[in-house]
Image 1 (spheres, each protein chain N blue to C red):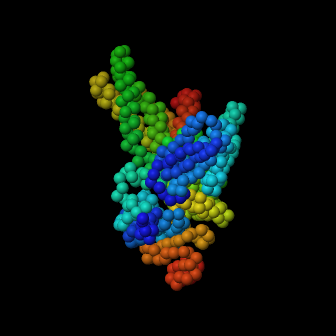
Image 2 (cartoon, rainbow over the protein chains, first blue to last red):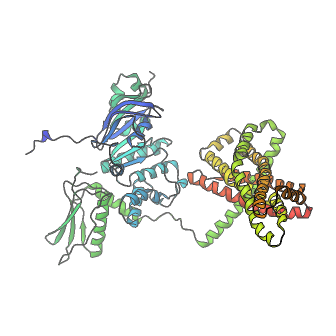
Image 3 (cartoon, rainbow over the protein chains, first blue to last red):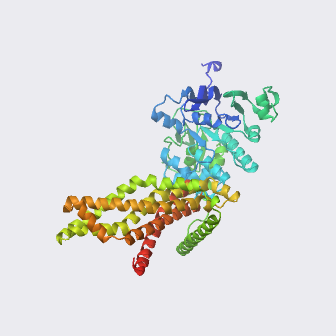
Length: 257
Length: 374
């Protein structure tokens, strides 16, 4: 019999090891290391220009790190073959800041396109699944609308429906609350929570919305522009209460340094 | 996703359970993989119910929801009770959600034939009023800027003149030279039959100066500059830059349209003049090579056929075409939808509008010049 205490714990869903990110040889973040557990609601927070979105772009493979590596379920992203990378990318969903919906396609077509590319579902099934996903984000009945015909909040939700189309294990959110009113923003937070609770999805959220951070985040990392890296990591509520670091207090408690 | 991740394939097994059938689902159900499809069981007697149960080690996503929906539809058709009590609550909720999503009627988007005709007619009227309104706005703006010339964006205008004029020289050179070559080559074959070789100079001179130089320059600029203006202004509209101008109390037409229109109105005749020379040169090359007409003879004949009014009519047309191209590009850019597709449509629409209006204007000029005897 196997001793349960000897059973190795599963690797983190995402692990960044010594990641240096930047553009054109200019490092914006240096030697960043952190890990995200499966089904965790993990927030990357920090002031404007601290490198949150840059880190996200490196995590999802849009940019290659200058140094270090990103591992998904213990396997490195960069070393994979093209086919393996494609398979891995199928397990990601990304909600971009603007929604990034394809403007020439209806909402149904936007959601159904990943299904068309990566599954063997029939057209009827793809349409039904697209309707289900749009229904999950509260856009039932808007399947035949074009992105230009809906509001900013609806675009975000439609973008989320598309990100969820392939039932990804990990969903990345780039500033989901940006440009939304507090009510829409709260509803989106509830939706993120619901997705995590229903599907056990690992959620990585880039944000600087304090309300969202305190409402739904399990754990955060706080990035700092001057430190070019992580200055705090943990439960945001605990950090806000107990941290003595002026940068953490300034950000989470809105206190002057 | 739900439950511990398993590395075994998705499975669905049916087994008898008294007078009922038990459906046990297990393995890894992934929508991106190849999950099983529902196949009706081959049993001698019809079961009273289908009882669904998940294996402990199952991993599932939307593919399982689809599978169960198909199974339930089959049960409903066969009048067999579908028992889902043993399924987890979130899976039952998703089954209900899929039912609702499929049952919800789409928001009515279909348009009938009569409505289509109505919309088409309305669109036509809007197009016409849009152009009229824009021409009016431009006229008012020109008067306003003539009264207050310091408000005019001379720097922008000079920059646009460089962009639409000097930068267009290579493509205008190529197109005009080749138009001259093509015209001369076609004419040479016919003229030789009648022994009127030398009249090639008359034909090239008149057709290039009166028509072809202005029209071909206009076509090149409509594609090159008109589309660029529409894309520029369309992007500016999408980025709310035009709204920002309006909030500053600056008329977008004063700031963006008039400098571009003036640049094109000034540069198009200059380019057309240049196109005249290149077209005539193209004809000269063919006259020399095919009909063995020396350049001096070609030139003397051409000068005797073409007078000053022929050149000026071409240049007047070119200036008008320039204004039309600038106006079409700016109008379509300002009318663009605030999206990437909208910008693309605006660029296409700008070229089409400019070409149609140029042809209409060319026809009007032909009538007017005929009446004036030019």
